[in-house]
Each structure stands twice: as structure tokens, then as C-alpha cells.
Image (cartoon, rainbow, N blue to C red):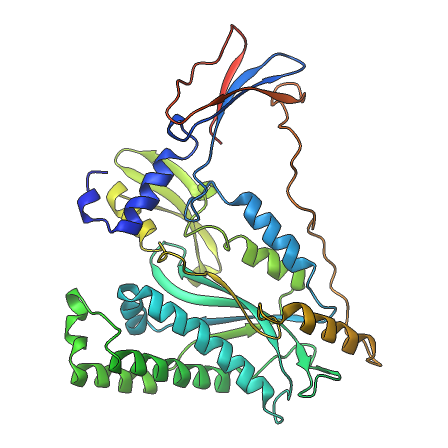
Length: 379
């Protein structure tokens, strides 16, 4: 933590949690195998939502709950991305601009879909914020999973969309751009935005207005496609990122010779897997770019899937679908929907049951009792 003085409060807490995760600092327990007698210390996790090793159980529970809500219709994967100049402002105003990103993307979809000349229906969906690219640079965008259809305005029947088409991307991108820039302008006029470093000049209304004008003329990227694997697979894809940030431990290749090496996919070369090497300070810097403000919700729901009315609306949707003459295809859910196991841990040597012998308080000595085969489980 040589550069701790340069870290903000949130970043300090994240780094402290990750450093302490699955170490004696957080306490744990000693457990032994009923069969072979293997004894090991299992330390507690930090449970910080930015930790690459934690949140597995929370992710599984979230995924199971969302899978139980899938409707028997085609689903679409829609992505809204911010242009680089707006992303730079978002980095210095995370809570405000990430919230605008959610609101503008959801409103763009729901407003366009409600147009009788488009779908003419009330849609719903799940949106998940990603702020990183493959090389861990700041790249804010939201991934949305949306059913291909919606409830009629009076809620009496299901309006099905085309099998391989959700909404026209060009008008969707233009509407998203307009809604986002309107909210951004309101935030600026209210004095809610802060600008630092090379962005400091944007605090001047003339400079900010010029940027807004440039962004109105620029093309904004919106991607919409029906996933090849079906809604369950698209949901599982989102699930990989809902409860962690930036990078998984599985992508780390080496930590040696003054660098950290990790794999990344180069989508400009058909997703070729490459290895990037960064100095430790730069790697930590890029990782911490993606810390979120306290109490900021990375997963949000909109339309008929909004939290306040989801259960009632899903019941309406299923009733409407049951009355349809032609039912859209039913997705095959091939991912387990059960909650994470709460059974005792399994011995890595013989497959026996690991029984807890003692509880270790925070900062307790890691030495196990008695003379027996010993392992320290920090995975």
C-alpha cells in the first residue's frame, strides 16, 4: 500500500478488504476430515463486492431467482455504451452519471417500444453496469436482458415482437443520446457535476455547451441482438459480472519480475486471447478505476420488471402468454436454479466430510491443533 495516500476512502476500504480476504485477519475456523484426519484452517472471506474471490454464493442466489422469472419468449441482449468524452466525465462523477446511464437507457427502450408504430407494448428488463474493458480501462456501459415483447397498454394480452428483431438500433441510439444529454445538462445546470485535472475547463458553461453540441452530433453505440444460446445463457453471462468488478482470478497468469500478467481478448482480431503485462502500480490503478460509490446499485430493473411491481406484472405476463394462440418458443434453462449448497465442506484428499473443530477469532494464530496432515485453505 505504498500509494495509500493517493487513494480515496472507498478505494482504501476495497484494498484493505481484498488484502485481508481469507487470511487470519478476518478469523475463520479449523476443520478436520472424518475419514483421513486431514486438518486445515479455512479463513473467512471479506465479502466485499469488489473482491474477485467473493460473492460466489450471492451470485448463485441472484441467478437462481432471475431464472425463475424467465418468460417463455425470446430474449434480447442490448448494450448501451458511453462515448469517451462522456466516460471521462463519468469517472469524476460516478454516482450521478452512472445513474443517468441507467435511466436514459431504460427510458429509451421503454419509450420506443411503447410507440404503436414500433412494438406498441410495455416492456421490462434487467440492466447491469459494467465499467471495464478487457484491458481494465474505464469503459462504462450497461448490458440489458429484455424479453422480445411486452404487455399491451391495457395489460390484457401479450404483444410478441419479431423472432429475431427487438427494436431498431438507430432510432434507439438517437433517443438514448438525447435523453442522456438532457439529464447531463440538467445535472450541470444544478451544479451537481465536479471537474478535475484535464476536465477542469468543462466547469465553464461555454466549454460544457460546446461538448454537449459535439456529443449531439456524434454517433452513440447501441448493440441489440438475440443471444444464440437463449435467455438462460444470456442471463448466465450477465451473472458472471453482477457480483464482482473488472477481473477474475482465473485471468491472472503471473505476478513476477515487477509485473502482473493477465489474459485479455482482442475483439479487433476475432477475440484472440492475448497476455498483457502491467507494472503492479498500474494494475492496481486500473483495478481501482472500477470501484463503485457506496450503496450504488449495479443491477437495476425497469418496465414491468421494476422491483415495486415485478411479481404482479410477471403474473399478468404469464396469464397473457397462456391465452396466446401462438406461443413463442420456451427457453431451455440448463443452468442449475437451486440455491448454493449449505452442506459441510468436502475433504480434498479422500472426499470425506470436513467437521469444524474450532473457531478462530480475527487475527488468531493459524496453527492447527494436534499432529495431523495439514492444509491452509485460502481459495
